[in-house]
Amino acid sequence: MNSEWSLDALYKGYDSEEFKRDMALTEVEVRKFNEAVSQMSKLPPKEALLSVIGVMEENDALFSDLFNYCGLMQSVNTRDENAAAYLGQLQAKYSEMTKATTAFEKYVSSIDDLEAVIASDEKLTDYGYMLRNIKENSEHLLSEEAEEIIALFNISGGGAWSDLQSSLTSSVTADYRGEKLTLSAIRNKAYDPDPEVRREAYFAELACYDKIKEPVAAALNSIKLQVINESRLRGFESPLAQTLHYEHMKKETLDALLTAMREYMPQFREYLKIKAKALGHKNGLPWYDLFAPMGANDRTYTAEEARDYLLRVFGGFDDELRAMAERAFSESWIDFYPREGKVGGAFCSGLRNQRQSRVLTNFDGSFSDIVTIAHELGHAFHNLNIEELRPLNDDYSMPVAETASTFNEHVVMDAAIAAASDPAEKLALLESQLMDVTQIIVDIYSRFLIETAVFENREESFMFPDKLCEMMICAQKEAYGDGLDPEYLHPYMWICKSHYYSSGLSFYNWPYAFGGMFARGLYAKYMKEGQAFVKKYKELLKATPINGVEATAAIAGIDVTSPDFWRMSLASYREKIDEFGRLVSELY
Image 1: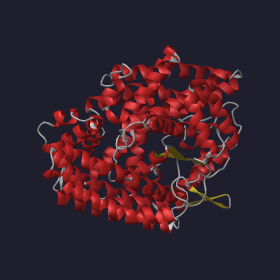
Image 2: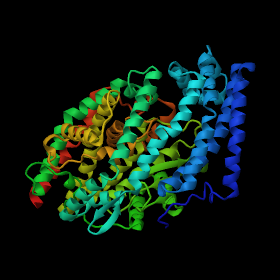
Image 3: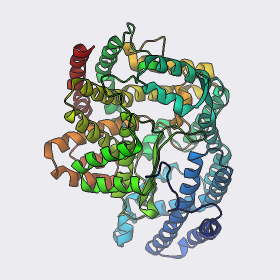
Image 4: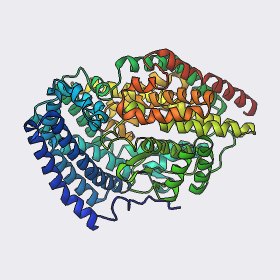
């Protein structure tokens, strides 16, 4: 089993004939698309739509391979000059279709009998959701020239600022005990069983941000101002309203989720205080012990052991999931270990044309890292379940994007907890699960608060690093309350989280809470219905690119606009926190 992924399924290198051929083909495909759009008015609506969509499918196949290859190459080596150069070329070439894309979208919105046209052809029926969304979004379109200008300026604007943040956070080093460690490596020490290691690593991490805080603050300010201006130009009330619109989710649903989260925040603070007391802290849990392991599950795992564990657990849920995971490990879909120049965190990227995925992690051997791999393989399983849809039907919204990934976490963690016979082992597993859910509820809420505050402040003022740190601390205090020691918070969380640094994707925080609690509800149904639920679960995943959030949830009989569903999901952790407290009293 290889420790680094292979991208040979895409291209064998920048110098390969296939890569050179496809880069050259971009010119042809862009011209073909622009020509097809220019001829629409000469054709009946049905033929016009089929003609343009056919070219769009070709374009998607070509550009997705090229963007995936260069983007994945850059993610493991942010200093890859070829990747940066080719990505710039691809973005510029892709932007040449912006004007025609806008014309196509305006054409779709102008079809009075769109429903009849959709119903007249099987392919158009399959693309019905996409076409209806285009018509619905038309009121937020600018002129063809303006859309082209925005796309071009984003390359050297928001896109470039985002690249800067990624480059700085992947290349900065922390000074730790005579060594220089990457940001990913120093952050991984937060899970170390040695309390002094955790504490020293925390201060070393904070110190390293001082080296990059000024340019990263400039990146954040610039991106958010660009988003505010574009949002206003498109007629949205706010960036949040724009996000909800394009993610096909009602504000009512977000309000219901946030209402339940705020109501149940005290139970997670109670968990944090129990942990703080067990670790000898009297004023809440200091940030450096937020991820401190408890109990007796301090063993580390090799990548091979992680593979064997996940295949065994996945096999108990679904054979198809296990088979896909086995391919991921045996066919080099996963890049495991942190190294200089590699981006931090973890992600999964779908390779639609190859019917594969690629997973990046920064594996350090903890059980939490196994759960992270399970999470990312959940995304890969989601990709697997939409493979049979039409090529352009592959874009599901942020809220449901975390469904399969978080569901996998529940499968892995509940299986581990159920199998644990030793109280110390059970405590370790239970604590790990509560630690993770606290992150997707409490910490995610703090991230939502600071992003909201940044947008509210940016129009009137430039926020320097000290101001952003102050805002981050305020958000953490509001979310964590007395669960954390106010003297030891994390003022630089705005630097290390890449989700803030996108001009096209704002508020990628609450979708984690949505996904976590939505998956929790789905998992409860699985526990009640058993294997009969698995088929329904796959149908739900398959429907995500062709349904709005509320309609997707309805497939499983869930009303996400009601706080009651979210309260039910959150209340399910009450028993776990009680069990955690009992085990802590017994063992500490």
